Image 1 (tube, helix red, strand yellow):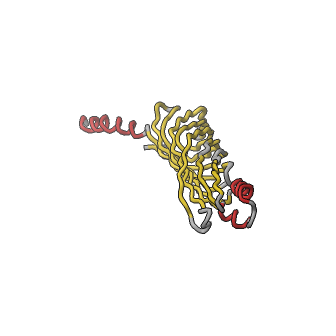
Image 2 (tube, rainbow, N blue to C red; image 1 turned 30 degrees about the vertical axis):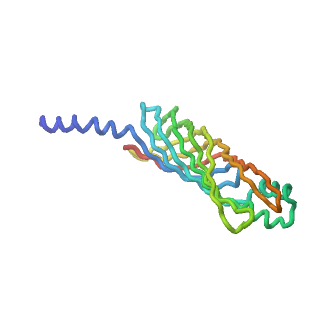
Image 3 (tube, one colour; image 1 turned 135 degrees about the vertical axis):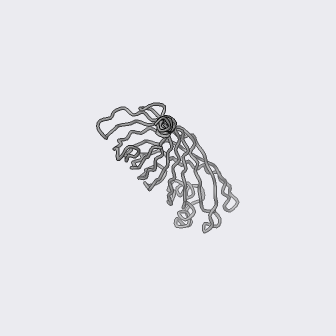
Length: 211
């Protein structure tokens, strides 16, 4: 019996420690200003300071192919419009947005299996941009852009079991990565600044488990 109690006393603190961490997977829609809405997925890890507050980190991935209408307009203005279709091809862009953030979440209300929370995050938005070469618009070039980002959100969780829950979350994300490049056409060189306004609303659902 003494050995049994000793084992329980040894294992119990480990169980308590394990319950102070969580991992979550989420997916949904993101509607940034730079482009149309699209699918976004993410992962978050957290450590609980107490039963109502946790800190952690998150990473997300958003990918979109689109024609940058602002860039088309700038090309048309700078070099004329010899062929609007070619300028649209030159402005085709494929972006991969990967925000890396530190997060903090406060759980404000809990009743039965349902709870309400608010969350905030700050970090770095890494933007990988595949854009068209101006002289050879069939060819892709790669560029990276970075910017400070922040996020505010709120959500509702529903407890599935002792260590698992599902949740729905609505958040606002803000970042504006940018970069400049030069284009030479018929002896004229122009410098363009491309600003990718990745600010917008996220609506996602997810699954979280505790360990």
